[in-house]
Amino acid sequence: MRTSILLALLMMAGICFAQPTQPADYGLKAFSIPDKQLGTINFYVSASGIDSTKPLLLALDGSGHFPLATLIRLKKQMLVYNSFDNDVLQLADRFHVVFISKPGVPFCDTVDIDADSVHFGDIAERLKPSAEYTRRAGLYWRSEAASRVINYLCKKIPVNKQQVVVYGYSEGGQVVPRLAVINKRVTHCASIVGAGLNQLYDWLTAQRVLAAKGEITHREAQRRIDSLMAVFADIYRHPAATDKEWEGHSYLRWGSYCTTVPMDQLTQLTIPVFMAVGSDDKNSPIYGLDYVPLEFLRLGKQNLTYKVYPTDHFFNEVKLVNGKEEVVNHKQEMIDDLLKWLEK
Image (cartoon, rainbow, N blue to C red; front, side):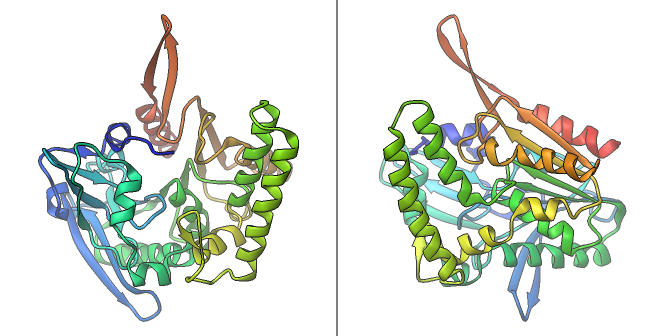
């Protein structure tokens, strides 16, 4: 889907006209950890109150090789797209807020587009992934790097260790369950529009839904599923391959996220877990997420707070009002629910 980037940025509250391109422009302080196994880990902490004791809130963004800030130079204007969650950054008065760059990706990069408007696909085509990103990007790097950042900050700045919160959005929501399993400093795990079952399963259920709605025949759905299964078989045969790609991501990326299933890690946790899900989310379909609370019930676990919103991947709800479509955003409602959960 080629959604207008202008609309998408407005939905994510990530559009800026003053062109902030440096960490300090966002009130962030840059840090770096050299690691023999993972390479250089670049991360950024809210500077306000950094010498005060506050809880830690580490936020992991979604998929792709986007920098945390991308300067987009169009014909008549310049825009800045932020891949990090601006709503979380607004909580810097209450938390040490932390963001991490992807491996081999700078804090900010620039895209020149000789047009009046732009789509996400146009940016991705011009921001080619670095060799470092292609070699390392996956569940293992993101979770291990985040774990090292937590350990570093708990030693270097005054952290209220009663609340070390990991918050993952989209792909980040698939990372935080593993992160919470491997790092025992984590006290709260929040997966936002992430995943429950194997992410590849979403591609299969999408075809079944199309057939059930009558948009394609059941025979066509099966033909597509057979084709997808052939691709998935190849991914599982070469789960570490960086020279093979499907749907814009390397086999390494797919192999890492689809070998370890989020629900298996979520059910290992005894700390509080918060999951926010959009019932109209096409990116992270609810069909594979609804199984998580059912599994918690089966296991007799009571540490899950599972919130469903009538929204898409960006917490937008489309309503018909007097025959016209109106968009209602529920992101602040979700943030408020998150904060209430943390206060329990």
